[in-house]
Length: 384
Image (cartoon, rainbow, N blue to C red):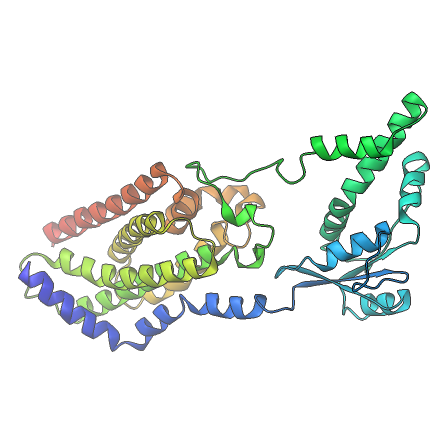
């Protein structure tokens, strides 16, 4: 135990003198700070222009078009924000110049036009977008969701009037408000049954969602950097005087960087607001660190010498981003490469952090890597 403590202090001091090691740790919180700075500002990714005649947000106006405008203008996330234009010409110009991703013009007497639409399906809202633009079609759904409550009531009133000849609008409003589900129709949960506060929050900044995968990949990079320095020291015959226990020293080279990366990773994930409970995050991160150590252990055993090992770092990290669902699921486009994702610990972490079975899978992955590495090294020494 004393030997391991001594080696831990030596490796700790040695690693902090390596610029590559320090850089790999700084990389973990850096994307979080950068993206939060970028997307937490008032400038959203998509700006949407709105216009209706004689609209004044400071004045009370019961016209449907004004109510819809006010609802949309009050909505803001890092993904979409709405703003009002002074004229249809200003709206068209903003869309043409790409100042706005798209634009919507709400007509006068919109409630009456909505009732006519139910009968003859004539368009009500005029939308502006570039011909090849497709991301703004997601905004169509959002605008429609704001209009749906009024549209569905008009549809109900039309149906009751058609069936009975008349409709008591006041009573119908009371019954409609009583039985409609509003936004309680769906609730998001993790696999373990706890509520998913991220997807359930209307103000969630979805642009930050890939950060967990990015953090996991950068923790893997810190473990790979530790194993690189072990390969370098092994090539320099630093461990030749050790009769036994060299594998335990190697695990220290891997655990210290991965452990420090895990601490920074917990900070990065919790600071985004996407974390589950802190005990769950700590337990999941501990299991993931073990998986990273197992991966780096077996990889550094199979790769001969420190000259070839640096080429593995970009392959393992970039490959993890491409194979795992970090930004996009590449395996959905190329199904043949899907089995490769199970070789990287990042995939096991992203798919298994929200349930006990997933965390046990991470532990099994790490322990298997460590045991295989030990057996291979022992067999190699026996042959030589």
